[in-house]
Image 1 (cartoon, rainbow, N blue to C red):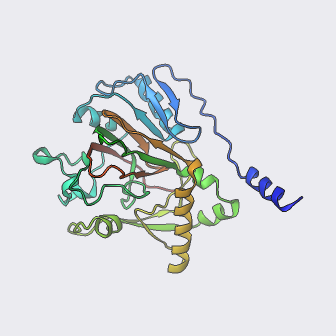
Image 2: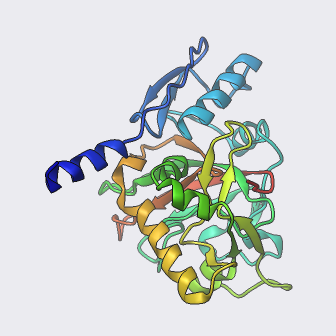
Image 3: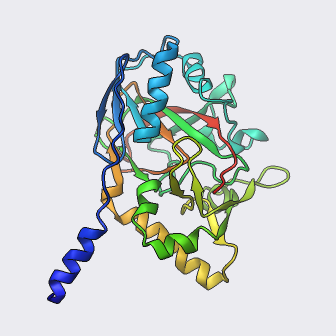
Length: 307
């Protein structure tokens, strides 16, 4: 076999099969964004309580597609929180634990610690989430999912969010590297983004800092997923600093440069996106300065990650 043929064969062997979802919903519609990650969900009015069957079908869709897009939703904060509360107790962001929230994360006089405001305009120095990350992995029990409801989009266009499947990122690695990673743990430190990135003073006692496995098992699907991210992960504990830095950079670039792991959600006013934080990363694209975008996020407390 010639060298070029061998390379083509190797690439073909590394192609990943699309996992059949086996879903046959009766109360919702599911339109996948691509075969790997993301789907638009229809037939649901989030201003009303979901029936038991609707809830079960939405949950199954989340496990199958990891990112769910609900268009044309007109909901109150209580509706938003009610939907999130179906999946577990609501998360309080570290910004709000000791009232250290920066201006862009505040909700005004009626501040609700279970609502995180996500906004940017011509006065913003940065926007939340403008590098690849998984939400708040510095917590002992990071959010199992987040629900961002955008009500105002830039008149210029732009402001998309890109999502990547960490299940597919893990599965695309060689078996030898998968085996090596499964024996490792990593430190996730809130000081990295909140102080190092956004310049926020730490609350009394400091930002959360915890250790999680580099590879974790999704508690519902049972599939293995890569669990390190550029936003919060500071080092792999079992390696020396240079080895850790090199391996983490490889894994981050692996996620960020493989477009076949990814989807991109284009926001419209009154769109809610619900992503599975246990097996995705996302990146908020800030390509709309000096125009404005406004949204509010609810997150749900998850289990402690484990292999």
